[in-house]
Image (cartoon, rainbow over all chains, first blue to last red; front, side):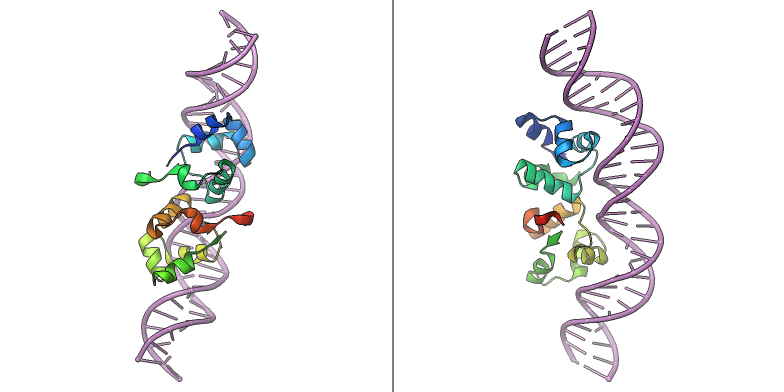
Length: 66
Length: 66
DNA sequence: ACTTAATGACAAGTTTTATTTACTTTTTGT
DNA sequence: ACAAAAAGTAAATAAAACTTGTCATTAAGT
């Protein structure tokens, strides 16, 4: 599934490690999600939503369900 | 995590089995999610969102992060 | 050019948890 | 009261999220 994490990080001048720390996951997890290797759990998605103050739908793009 | 699945089903006069079939999961999965036993995967959450034509945030309630 | 920080990738393992299968209980309709 | 449908639950399996560790590549700063 595609996502806008990279951009959202950039807008806030955050590194993958920064984001990982705030979300309490490993840096590799952020990297993997960012690269579309797998999807976050729903709770983690909500955590991102809260952090970025954006609805999940504006962070993740489910079109074509990849 | 709490959710409004039961109500959303009722509004559409759908049974757990009906919903399960539409989402291509087992009926027990729907039941378990509905009862808050666990959360759906993000892809399944999106599928529900599409089916009910509602944002994920209006189906699932993450407040208090239970 | 050199050094460091940041990202990307990946294997392998762990662990959580989503999902299924099977069985029981409750509800609903007649 | 009975039968059938719907909902609930438990145990087991399957799947996938997530970690740790490591290394290679790219970007940024001095």
